[in-house]
Amino acid sequence: MTDPVHIVCPHCEAVNRLAHERLNDTPVCGKCTRELFVGMPIDVNTARFNKHVERNDIPVLVDFWAEWCGPCKMMAPAYQQAAKRLEPRVRLLKVDTEHLQDLAARYNIRSIPTLALFRNGREVARQPGAMDVNGIVSWVDALMRHA
Image (tube, rainbow, N blue to C red; front, side, top):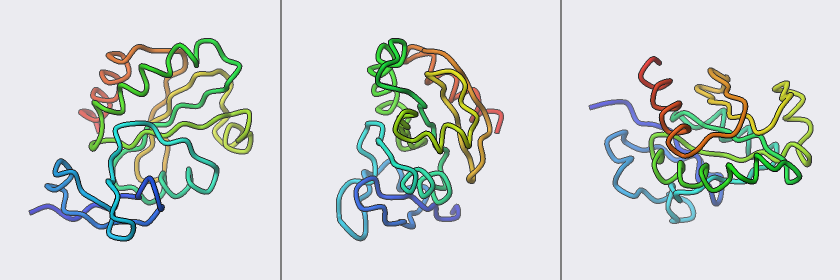
C-alpha cells in the first residue's frame, strides 16, 4: 500500500486525498463531486496556478503560451490530446503569458510556447518550442522515468 496522494480539483480547487492505486478509477472530488481528471488542460490564473503546482502530488505540466503566437495555436490541439494521454499521471495547465505576466516573469519565460514540468512545487524541466502530441508525451514520460 502506497501513501495517499493529494489532487487539486480542477473545478472547485479543493485538495483531495486519494489512494494512489485509485488514480485510474475515475475519482471524484469530495467537495463538489465532479471528476478530478477531465482529460484536458486547465486554464489558470495566478492563484489557481500556485495551488495546482504547490498542492498536487502528481507532476504538473504547464504550457506557457499567448493568443497572438502562431506556434502556440498550432500546438494547442496536441497539448489537449496529450492531456487525455497523460492524465491521471500528470496534471496539465495552460498559462496565458499576456494575461499572467507575473508568472511569465517569475519563471523567466523568454519564448513561447514553453512547456515546464513541476514536481513538489518546483520546476524540474523545461522545453521551449512547439511539439506534437507524441513529442509532448514522450518528453514527459522520459522525465518521469528518470525522476
